[in-house]
Image (cartoon, rainbow, N blue to C red):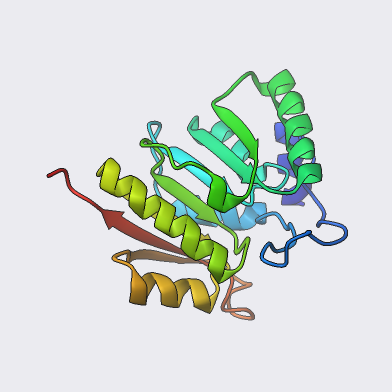
Length: 203
């Protein structure tokens, strides 16, 4: 019910899963974060108007439109699949027609090739790719922090054990918060969000 309600509210089409397979075995198939899970996340996790959020594996753009509509934040969607990228652009046209222009951008490129901007400070992952790609992306974020010290947070939905192990054993990121998705978590412990934080102070 919520899937239909929010898509209609935003004037977008994000339901359904990806048909076929990605060309790269390192990239997983598209599946949007359920709206009910997003609602639960943002009941507990605060974002601010001056945050800049990057959604890796953004698919058709559901998170981008949700965040802009309710929180008026800048969101960049990074998607390597050209078909999904074009669907996101169509959704953007529909969204703008009903809700006005916003700070929403979509890029079609590999996640590890996305240039981390000095103002990017929140990064969202719905288990979009292999641990090898995740390592490269996190390393890019850490290099950005060396150049522009700041606080950043990684938001992981349905987090893989490989992601968790890497962050906790090989990086300085620390777990800030866990948000479980009620009712479904009891049957599937992967139905949760983990938020990791790293702060690099100015010298």
